[in-house]
Image (cartoon, rainbow, N blue to C red; front, side, top):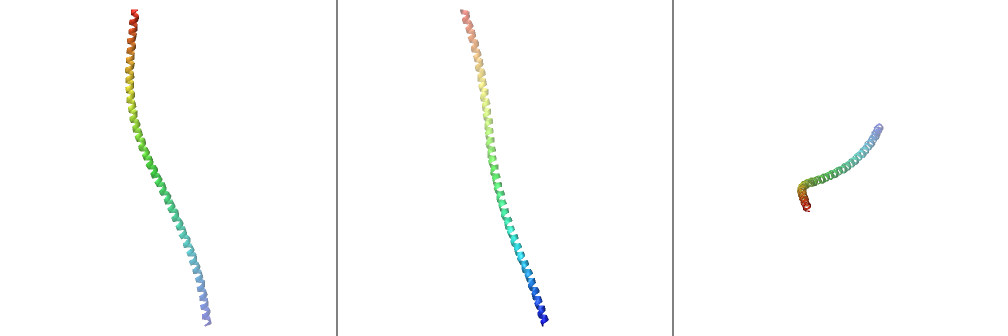
Length: 125
């Protein structure tokens, strides 16, 4: 009976030692799970932050693209207006040049007439 009791005591000590080892393994695994969970939560936060930053950058780029498109439209309209104004100015310049040419010919004709008249007056005196 004593031998059985010694064997049971040895088995009990072995079971206790195995229990302590298993319990320590469980504690180690729980700590590892908590560490991994904390890491996962941190990575999720970083991913969400990164996603928000990318979204803000995308929105900014869309806004800038829209502003540039509007500026391009204004520039095209201004260019069209400028071309139209240039054509009008060229037409007005052509009219003014023709008017000046006409007035210059009229002035030359009047000067020639004045010289003839002055020559006739000189001839009479």
